[in-house]
Length: 242
Image (cartoon, rainbow, N blue to C red; front, side, top):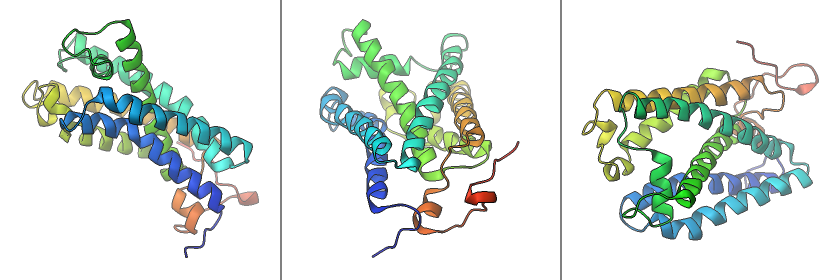
């Protein structure tokens, strides 16, 4: 049996459950793009239950004084909302000004969630689409803080660029008619728009993680004691500086 280092079994189990819940929404979008099922079906059967489970785990973490998990959740909300907002500024500019994308991704999510792909968007589909889009941003930020933890800001950039690469190689590219890396739509403008949008998201997430005093240490360090991170006075992780 693996002996945990600084985490209790309860917090480790709750963290694993919260990570799984945070990953459901983006995975559901990709899975629905394969044609195996619809995002409309997955919305009520997977995305909503996972969101409610994540919120419940965040509340439990606060009540149980699981500081690591609670801090990762709080930071994810702040950084995820901020990062997604600045990412959308870049994406919307690339879409509307430079025609670097075939459409609005949040709008697409909304019509697929509400089963209105043929009819087009309405206020409810747009509301749900944007809600899921921002939840995905929070979820990815949570995974970063809960697993990678305290790092320099540029690690967040690498993390976000990796997400962008996986996205552009995924099945969603087929349903938006762009092809891998957008080569069937705009071979230069599409990947440039996606990478720039995710770059600013990564800067936001990485900056919040570097500057916050409550950012957890690396999960493997806290759970297993390896790799051991340097600590300052009082056993606290040192403040990272630019």
